[in-house]
Amino acid sequence: MAADTTESGNDVGQLISLRHPKFGNKMCCLFVNGVLQELNWFKQSYTFWFLGEYVTEVTDAVSVLGEYMKDEPWLKPLSDRLRIDFTEATRKTSDIEFLPTATGNNPGPCNGSQKGGGHTLLVVPMAVHSNNIATVLESEGVEFLLSGDTKVPLTSCNGKTVCLYFSANWCRPCKALTPQLVRLYEVLRLEGKEFEIIFISFDPNEEKFNEHFKCMPWLAVPFDANLHKRLSDMYRIDRIPSLISLSSDGLSIDEDLVGLIEDYGVDAFPFTNKRREELKAADEAKREGGKIEELLTHQGRNHVLASDGREIQVSELVGKTVGLYFGAHWSPPCRAFTSKLKEAYEELMASGDQDFEIILVSTDRDLKEFEINTSSMPWLAIPYQDKTRQDLCRIFDIKVIPALVLIGPNGKAISTNGKAMVSLHGAKAFPFTEARITELEAELRKEGEALPPQVKDLKHKHLLKLEMAKAYVCDYCQKQGRFWAFSCGVCDYDLHPNCVEKSL
Image (tube, rainbow, N blue to C red; front, side):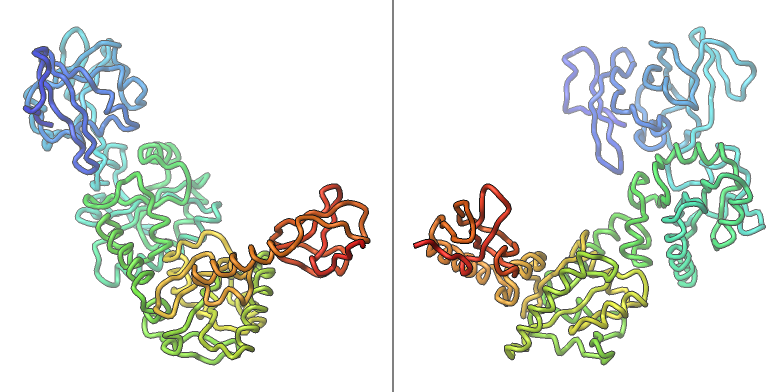
C-alpha cells in the first residue's frame, strides 16, 4: 500500500491506493487524521488477507473498522466504531505474522496482549493465505503431517509446489480422480519435481480416513473433523473432489485444479497461469494449425484403427475431408445418429469419392463398449487407450455427444456442427463447407417456391398447408420425409408433396 499522489482528497485527507499484487484490484481510500475511512473492498471471506497479501507496506497509521470483521469466526467481535491503529509494528508487512483484534472485555492473560483505548488488543496468529502451508497448519494447531503411518514435519513441504486435496472415500468422483492424481504424482516425483499433495479428508470417521488414505502415496493432515471443516471454509471448498494449488506464482487459490488436471494431466504442472496459457496456445495451434497429423498422432503412435483392426497411417488422411465423430455406444442419441452418419458415409464411398473419412473419437466407458461400438462402424477410430481421445474433446470443446467436427483438406476445422449438416442434408452436405450449405438452402427455397402454398388432398378432409419440417413421417406411405411437407393445422397429419392426390 502506498500513497497515490495523483489523486486529491479535496483537502479533507490524503488519498491512497490499495492494489492486490496478483489480481490488480484497486480501491482508493481516504486518510483523515491517520484513519483509513473506506475498507469495503476488504470485506472478503478471509480478513487475514488484509495484511497477508494486499498490503505490501504501510506508510501511515492504518485503522480497521470492526464492523467489517464482525462476521469472521476466528476474530473477536469489535465494537461498531472501534478503530485500531497499526503504528510502528505494522510498517513492514513482510515482518507481520499476527493480526491484532480487539474486544471490550479482557479475556485474561494472552501472549502479546496490549492495553489501549480502554479495550484489550489481542495479537493472534494470522494464517497467511499463501503457499506456506506450514504456517497455515501450524496456526491451526497441526504439529505434523502423515506419510502412511509415519509422522513428518510440516517443514517437509517447504520450497515445493503444494496442492491441497479435499476428498472422501464415499465420493464417486473422488474415487475416479484419485487414480489420476496417483499417476500424476508418481510421474512428477520420478522426474524429480518439487511437488507435494496434502490430503484433507471429508470422511466421516478416522477408520474411513485410514481406508481412503492407504491408496495415496502423498501426505495427509491427521484426521480431525473440526480442523478439516475449518480448512475447507478457509479455502472456500464447496464441492469435492477439490484440488487447490498453493504455488506462490500459480493460479488463484480460489481456482480448483481438478478440471485442469483432467484436461491436461501431468502436462499441467506446475499449475501456473503461465503454464495454463501455454497449454491453451498449444491447443489453438493444433486446432488452427492445418496439420491433421499433429491432431491425430500421439507419442509415437502415427496410426488410427480400421474396423477390422488394421492400422491406417495418419499420413494417408492428409488432403482429405475428415469427420471427427465424438460418440459412445451407451448413448441412445449417438446410436441414432450413427445410423444416419453411416448412411451418408456409405453413399459417399459408393460414389467413388475417396476424399472423405470419419474417425471415431470414443467416449465409451470401457474397452468392451468401445469394441462393440466400432464393430458396427465402417470407418476408423482413435485407439481406446490413447490420450488423444481426451485431448480432442478438450481442443474442440466437446460438451455434448453425439458431435461431429469436420476438418477440411487443408487440415483446418470447417465446422463443429457437422451433426446438424448430416442430419439435415445427409451425403448431399459434402464437402460440408458454408458454400455448400448455402447452395443446398437455395435449392430448398427454389423447391418450395415450385409447390402450391396449400392443397386439398382426396385422402384427408382438411386443407393442407405447405410447411418446412426438418423430419416427419408421411401418414400415407409411412416413410420418413424431410423439409417440405403438406400438413394439417387441425389434426396431426403430414404428407410428402409426392403423395398428395389433388381433387379435380
